Length: 58
Image (cartoon, rainbow, N blue to C red; front, side):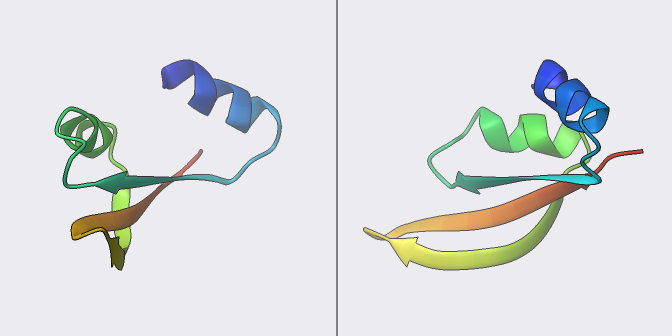
């Protein structure tokens, strides 16, 4: 993930967004440690909750 963020910044991206669900038990804490911010809860799919998160690049 750090390489993805590095490449995005090198290519001029101001922000990176991801989507995660309640089933992604390893990914959600990783995004929180990396300081991604939860932007919105997305409509559930097949009874599973999803969220959109983003990280501003400096």
